[in-house]
Each structure stands twice: as structure tokens, then as C-alpha cells.
Image (cartoon, rainbow, N blue to C red; front, side, top):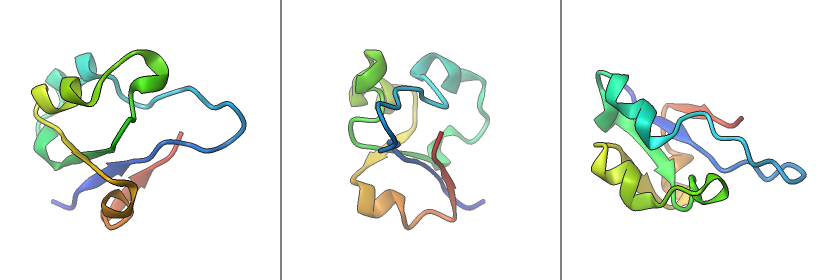
Length: 72
């Protein structure tokens, strides 16, 4: 399975996020999800919460190397 990267949108004041740490418990291959550093900050979630849920956190350049990208 390819990794799926979640990017921080740089559109005008975009603060929505596709997934929150609480959502990750319902995902089977959560270890294949890579969130850009600071992904949850706009909605009050730290990188440590994504890591604790089993996902990966990486710099934007690494996320862009994922096979699939999510940009809300």
C-alpha cells in the first residue's frame, strides 16, 4: 500500500483538516498516513497526537513524495 500524505492547505485562511487524531482509530493502516508537520495546529491538535495515534509526521517535502496526497 502506498503512503497517503496530508498537506496543510495554503489557500486563503483555510483551516479545515481532513482527519483529526480521534479519527485515526477507525483506520486500518494508519501507519501509512503521513501528516505534514503542524497539520493539526489550526484546529488545536499537536503533531504528538497524530504520532500517538500511529500516524507519521514529516516535513512538507517528504509528504509530497507520498503516492497519494490529500489537500482539503
